[in-house]
Length: 292
DNA sequence: AACCAGGACACAA
DNA sequence: TTGTGTCATGGT
Image 1: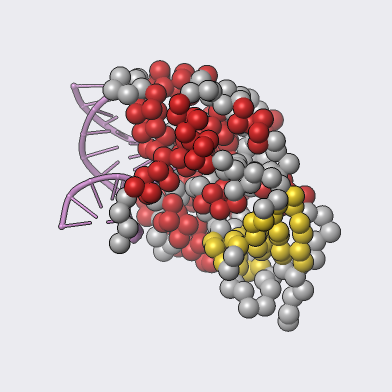
Image 2: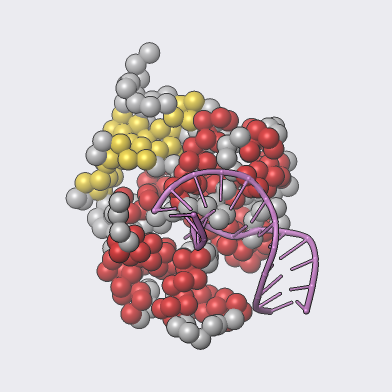
């Protein structure tokens, strides 16, 4: 049966939708026509960038669009965030190169599961694995006519009920037992993801790190991208490279020293600054690398 | 065709 | 505390 689609206009200035959706924080967005399609809060969505806002389209009737405005954080004052960054050369360069890049507010479970799958994988591969997991175990969603099938991200209960072999069939390799064990922890309510935001940064981080396959970096990704902790500062290989060559050139700082630096130097929106550095390093490299 | 990817973990020294 | 090997897969 044909599904009536529904549209909404979200005003937003200085919002680089493409950079935001491809900057390695969310893994379910794919380009389609002149916009992007994905799944937010269990709904198929198509987003199209406009000079002064974002055009959103869903497959079913929506009376309240807060779920999407919250996800996109369209109400956030980006100028205030950028002004809180340290006034140094690396941050000036990153902001100049990535202006309009935003942080999203994702659902904790999908974010946690996705980043467990992210370890030692390129962003393209993470997208493929996550897509497979959704196709295999997620509930099918209503989509407009003529649009490819879409699936919800599978619940922790659903993943807790599958086998490690089922997960390995999704090409996730050694991450399969990690995802399975964590899904079972969340499904059994041994880990309360919704309650993380009421904890201190340190306590919330410790809670996440009690999950198998979740170390400091993945925990900080979940805290920053879904937990509402603006000071969480995930350090991956790109950020490490940025810190070494932009802030500690040839001084070989200790891990303890780097930890203190990332926790103090970048201000109250350190996680935002981190995302700018991350995207800056990645796009800078691909721009200078030869293409076939 | 090597090298490396939004790491975590057990185990050296 | 910091260094190394291992894990699985495939993009560049």
